[in-house]
Length: 427
Image (cartoon, rainbow, N blue to C red):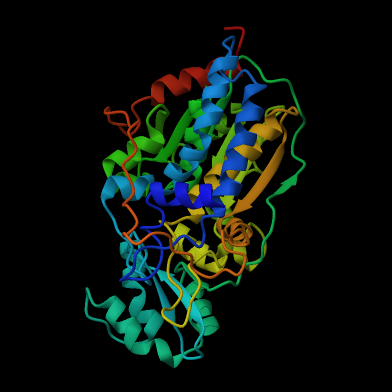
């Protein structure tokens, strides 16, 4: 496991994990083994496909080069955002700052994410008291002992807030259900990426780098929230995709046409959101061989389908944290680590499904993926592992980021032409 710990440290993941103060934490370096395997399997699957239409994805020499870089790439995909933003670990506060681990009245730990303005506005209802603007976290810490962790999580979810109890999710493999029929891949692979934030866009990014034509679909009213954050991070995930923007309510028929002709659909909305618009997997007649990937926070069925989940709180749900010790409480592991893990696994599943003719609906959840990876550790006992005397190095910034901006809707007309060509190929 030493090579995994070395890679974990070099990528800055140790520096993003563990308590403060401290040198950093290597106890979860074993998750790299699973991510590297998933990337190898993705590489192997796309090597058998021609995603570009008449052009080989990669020659034998290129494939070998990619495979030697996979280990490094896996670690970089985990730490790249922090490398770009300069964010650092804060123990029980997530690297991004929007999620916190808190000990409830029963001594159990839970996490809450307040990433959106609407989340902050709901804190008074959560704590059932008036809250001074800007002091939402202080109000939570003053009242957190009044309820058990399960009670806090239940109330937060009732309000539509992203919350999770530590370790509540069990390991569960993504599911696949029959949908449509398999088919031989056509002239090129067309991917409609309706997802936002990190996991889904990363999946689309990996497919784009493999040669697929990926269309980033956004609402003109509510574009991907990542646009409002670090611009380089947004470009890292989305440059190289075609930008398609429409009003999901007014232009739903146009979006439905795109979804009907796409070979792959990636979406991360809560199931009821697309269902209301008639744009979910059950409402769109699939193209032969179409693979539909649905990313959720906690699952696509039952009550869990309505639970909001982000990378940090979903990681807590899966137990993918730096374990508590006598010296410190449980702390965050990496930066929203459930997001890149899910994005990598999603790309693998899509490529493997395409390699056997496609067809089907794949469901994958952040919390269940985190729970699966939580079983992987560089230390069988799960205790924190520290190496060396010096503090772990900070994460480096990715170097392969295009400088051009990704303008919202810049390629809408071009995408409409592609859709028309697929609907009426003889014209």
